[in-house]
Image 1: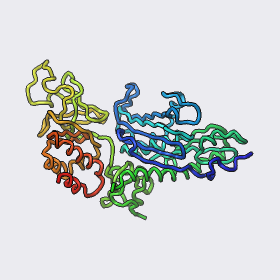
Image 2: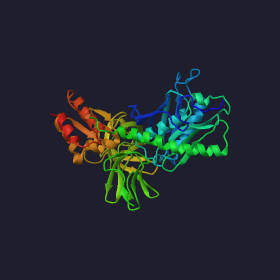
Image 3: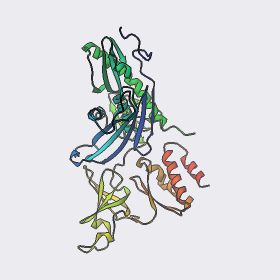
Length: 236
Length: 224
């Protein structure tokens, strides 16, 4: 059986319903919540502050550090063990790399900016939701950045190219299998700051995936922009 | 074709196109990308002739020479004090800049400023690596005795002070409190116990509504 209808009834190029809000963590300099379908990411920014451990200090520019954490009962399978693991370490690193091209770190020599991303509820696409929330949180904290970063997990399920895969699709084991392609895009330039691939895909299909990702980026950017503006609306 | 896309005093987010055309010059908080001027941070839009600029709505404190800041003594050095400036960078208060008194060799520096003392001081030097020197020489620069210190968003400090200090004197007159505002986002308040919560409430209101018009009237209302 081929994959001709999505498990949740969406169009193949349709994203899940998105919601965003900034200022969700009052004690942080900047914070944001981004929800896409059943995946929820909360990002909080702290800093600039002294770099610890000290050997990581860079006198030429500031350091951006991300901390990705899936909460214990957030996922579909077993309880996620608290504390960092190999997976969260990798995702923290790729999140830093996805955000670094837009943020100006020149003004913070020997200091660091930290982004904490917590995921209370997950349904695939967590690193993407995390990056999207982190970009909003950094903007909310008032850092100088040339653009936001938008991110979404695309993929190939069966023989269909789909936008925003959920957990059922990621785990699809029918004919053709499932390929998960998280991608992060800077909307103003179309610059790709994250591209990972888990599975198999042809060159032509990958090109189509990136094209679809660029389209999706515009939709996500609109949601981010609205959330940031709503935070400063007149309170009646 | 040249035109301004965003209305004056609208909230803009990083990456948003503010104006089209080479006729506009990118000012503070903006940058040029091709033909467009885009926002480089979260702020309020402002056009001044051909210059497009932003008033930041948030952001960390950036040290500038001659800023008056409120800071806490966090360590005592061989020839001065290290002070915490509400940022990633600490500053040094040297002996010569601290007091006009004669300090004999080997004197115990605790007599002048002890750890956890609060001071209001002026930034005298900042290097590219953000090494900071401060001075206590100048009118009104002193150790802060009594009172308490609260923390506000450093981007909102100009609004808390107001035009030529109008906003802060409104609060001072309304409550009889002694208030010192540091550019770094620390505020020192010394007020009668029953007036103290009123002072903080007013400051928090200004902080929350700094980007909205008609704030002076609202603050006046608080003290009626």
